[in-house]
Length: 492
Image (tube, rainbow, N blue to C red; front, side, top):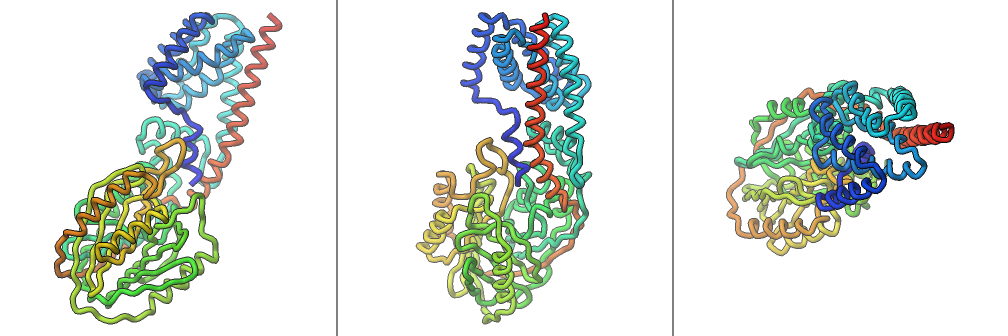
């Protein structure tokens, strides 16, 4: 999603030790450039605005902001126009605060630091240009208003409080019906839904897996897309409150495997429904497909910036249809064991797990709560489970909890962090020694009405694409302020 890349353009604060050195260097330099009072007013006004204007700063951000402004002012002092930083001050105070009008009062500190008629003119002109910029920003693409989106996105990214975005997303939402499906194996629940676990971090549907994977439960990713992201945690609770009760008993059949050019199918069939796992031989990402059976997008072969082509989707649809009509032999008894480990790394969100089956031949559904997987790591997982006697089908949940947490990448697929290998070793040790028991299978599904992103997800992509042009306009306005300041200095 292009939306998660927006954070790269936001306020990023360096590590504490770097910030301390930066602050010392800035204050020392300001003593020689007569900018000490400016640094003090910038720090004090920004700090006071935290309470009075509800700017979403803290001490670290306040220090960094005061330092950055002083650096810019120092550069502009070469041309005797340090007050040209006013547009940057006005815009930052606006976007980082909840009380926009009060925030503008706290953006007036350059008038104290550089008291002159030139500063007053530049400040007033900065306000005019900023209001023009807001007017340009106040455009809609489909359901998405860019100004509203940017204002709430900045506040969300500064606070991690999902409410800022969720209240906005709810305005754009569509109501969709989706299936919630559950396979109960003894006391273990295997859940999947028609909804999607996104968009990112703790917003909306990104909490879906955490809500549905508590205790002896795991989540499997269905064929769906970000259009089916629930818009808020309240919508996820609708799903949680309508979970199936697993009333219908199932008789197991012998698993089978199918292959095509780019994909492979592993199927666990029952007398009334089939569980069809779709893996990519070299690549896979979100695909949409409707089936009366339970189709699982294994999401287990990551390729950067990849999107399935039409011919790929047709290939998946064709091989799934073959699996749907393929008959299999009955199995009298199945042994089962369940292993789940709380685990977290830069790629793994909450847990890893394994559903272990003995149909006469041993199989393992190995689940990594992560967003896709490095293909080489998947090969390693399959090989290691083979060593302990299981044919493994490796899946990820497509969890977006870690999407957008870093400023250099949107997320890391499973296998990207060295810690993932240690987690795998722990899982293998648990699976090697686990005791298997007779399995009883039950299934049920419910239909739940939920507010989701719908077409607004495409509108948001276009709105974010627009951000590049808006940044160019903002930079041009800052250049205009600088030219005005220089002109006033020449006239004076």
